[in-house]
Image (cartoon, rainbow, N blue to C red):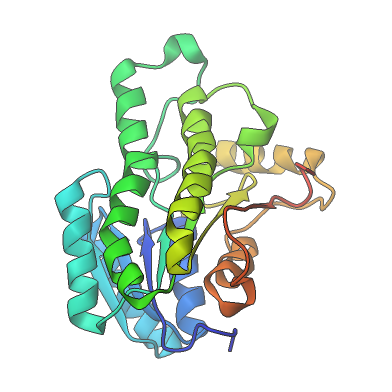
Length: 256
């Protein structure tokens, strides 16, 4: 077992698909109780069932729209009702793979799409963190892990709304770490590289993911499983004196 995770309660937003699903299974294997939160309610329930079946962990699947404050409050309330506490929040939900987005240049992006992406990728962190903080503050303990992106460091062309939102995640992480530190709550972020997170990738997607290998020290396609260790580390007692930090997990593409 990873130190500090046995019998903890972890919420993973966007946990019904892709990388989020892998996080949920990772927490279950580490001995934590897992709440899978996703706007796709049936997918959240399916992953919760899979976590229970494959890992033996207690689990709960919830339909949650992170861009809706009342929905995130209901998520926190349901978690406390079921498990009595909230120890870990992974702010993973984002518009990226499961919800398609424009990957073109700045001139091609519809302002409505910009607003929707910011509502999920940034306001979602704001609402979810505010929803769980009272329970964490009451216990003087908690871990919030936000998911950024290595595109922030490269400034890759295209998807400027996505890259901007993921840069905002880092600023949000640092400020919340300052605000929550007095209650012994650690807030950190992970910046994944280009990851084969699609559940049914097309040949174009596979080709794109393979191209990303060229800029890495570790020359292979990044998989969701490559991110689990960093998330579990930041959720565990091994990182109790780390806060406000961003870990790059990208095979050595961005070295800082």
